[in-house]
Structures are given as structure tokens and as C-alpha cells.
Image 1 (tube, rainbow, N blue to C red):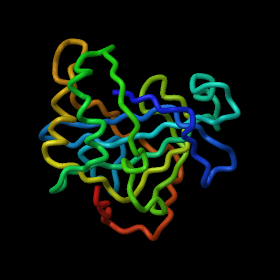
Image 2: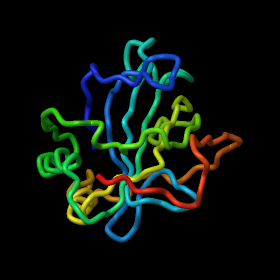
Image 3: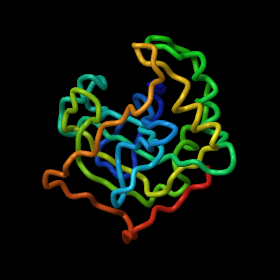
Length: 200
């Protein structure tokens, strides 16, 4: 599931160059297994959102993704909490309109900042790759330490609504964790064994 974003959204803080938002998408597991693409201290989370940006010195996302400084992705973990997340509701309510591959729908304006944790100063950062083919090594990753909370119903909608091309429920659409291969993962804070929750 890919949600294209307006070109007016840009990422300016923390990078020497400007990155323009291109799209956001989610990865998830199944009702019984978590499906985040990143882990913290070996722990995998229920789901993960990625907000993908490309360097504005290139004309398009397609051009940028093959260059070492081409892409920047903001990621956040999703977990089940007690209440409904109003920001994710604005996306999830459209899932029934795009149950099959190739279907599209229009999502009216929503607060993209609400999809990410309130505290953006706590994060992990590393240089890595796209998690879907062709997996170019061109991504500046920022993964926030706080998790976003969705209701049990919302998480069930996410992992059980969409269909794959062979008409099966689309689940476990995440890439297995890869070796670091000598990369350094930096944290903006003193690391601890736990991840704090962000109140949806």
C-alpha cells in the first residue's frame, strides 16, 4: 500500500540538503506475528510506517533512488494500544476501497505529522538501503524511538483487509532484518533496553 504525498511536503531539519516527500507506506505482519522491518534489541514491533523523501537536487524519486544521497526515510513503529488513533483512522478507513492490487483511491488532506511520534528528537540513524527491490544502498534512515499506538481494531484492519495478487490476505509484507555489514547505527539519546510509547 503506497500513499503518494504532495510535493509541498519537505524534510529540512538535520540534513544539509532538502528532501521532498514522495510517498508513505506501511509494513506489517499477521494477527499472530509482528511485522516491522527494523528491530530494537532484537524486538520486532507489530507494524512500521515509512515516509519516503527524495533529494530535491534530483528531478524525481526515480532518478534520486540510484544516488548515494538520493533518499531519506522516516520510520516509526506501530503497536496496539487502548484507544483509536484518529490520525491513522484517516488512512485506514480507505482500505476497503483498495482491497486489490492496482486499485486507487483519494485520501483527503490529513495531518502527516500525526502519523509520527510527538517527540522527533529521539531516533536511530544509519545509512542503508531500500527494503523493497531493487534495494539500492541510497537511504538515510531515521527510525524514531517512540512507538505509535493503534487500537486493536485498527491493527486488525491493517493486517487483514488487503488482498495479494493471488487473492490471499496480504500479510507479512516486511523484509527480514539484514546484517549491518559494518554500518554504524547512531542514537540521538542514551540507549536503554526499552522503547517508549507515543500516545497516538
